[in-house]
Amino acid sequence: MIEDFNNNEKKDINFKSLGLKIFFSLGLVVICYNLFFSSTNTSIKLIDIEKKEKIIKEFGYILNDYEVKRDTIQNGDSFGEILENNNLFYPKIYNIVQATNKVFNIRKINVGRPYTILYSKDSLKTPKVFIYQPNPVDYVIVSLSDSIWAEKKQKKVELKEFQASGTIYSSLSETMESLKLSPLLTNELSEIYAWNIDFFRLEKGDNFKIMYTSRYVNDSVYIGLNRIHNAFFEHRGKPFYAVEFKTDSLRNIYEYFDENGKNLRRAFLLSPVQFSRISSRFNLRRKIAYYGKIKPHYGTDFAAPVGTEIRATAAGRVVKSGYTRGNGYYVTIKHNATYSTQYLHMRERGLKVGTYVNQGDRIGMVGMTGYTSGPHVCYRFWKNGKQVDPLKQKLPEAKPISNKLKEEYLAYMKPIKIKLDKMKSTNFGPNQKSIIP
Image (cartoon, rainbow, N blue to C red):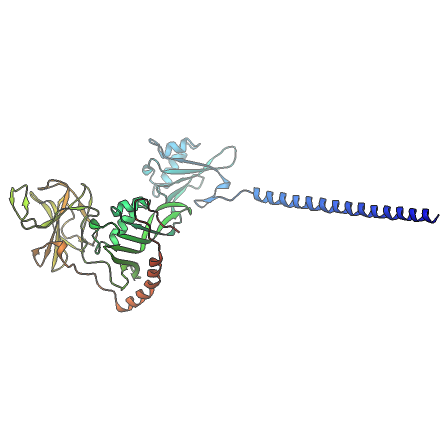
């Protein structure tokens, strides 16, 4: 009996234990069920949020509110035909042209330029807005609704900072090209050092480092170089620093100075033509082919393709502009009581007498007028009324920086110089790569 009782008690306990296990198991199932569907609902909610339409804004319009068509001007397209092909007809087109012609010249839409049309989001699909982009920055909005108007606007331009370095293995332009850098950087760098480095005589192993900014729209669309702000150039083992510094806040003028506060600019450029070669030097005993005898050559010839821009090497006033059988079309500029320069064999007549020019201004184009065997500009240089070799002159420097500004500059320059010094130089050779942050 006792034994049976004990057995029954044990069975009772086992049943209770089993019941507790089932209870807890069911509880876990319920909890897991709730957790699962709770997380599922949460994920569904997140997906719903993600599925919400992304707001797209451009040209000052929320494009989600319109049907959008993007296209480009094709050869033979006219403004009227474009509108007519997009559900607008005369006399509405005539009214649009008349109302907007002071802002938007419909005859000046160019082949290849993009335009956008915004339509109403309904079955009629009525054109509401026409947007024309003559270039990556500017655009014209033409409202096609009952209220017809036109307005010129510009996209926001952002500046992005970059760094690059290279080692010369052939020429500056070929080095820049191998780095896949803009040719504009070549021009900019040569302009900065135009008074200190002869870029026709670079040597293998010369190297440079530059810090510059480029212009972008829509965050990622490159629209061109802004400018070089700071640079380092080692030429024949000699370092040349160039740090940009604002010297005139009212006129927003920037100039470049070296590590000691010395202005890199000189009163005269070394050459009136960018990236040309010297085909003939100043030579008082040179034999001129056209004359067939010894005749002094008082100029320095810079060979360049016809049409290449000729620049004034210094600021001054045009005192002669004409044509002679030997010189062809020419211009003479008087810079001050000491210096004058002359530019021969231009393609056509240059600036008028009395015109004032700044250093670097265009005064004409390379041609082959007068006695010449090929396209070039003959550059002549007078000092105190006597023609001299410009390449052998100690050219005067620009006006020095004031003592107050020099102190400000040296403090400003110091961290920039440290940054330039820390920049890595690329390896020698044509397969070098630019260093871009």
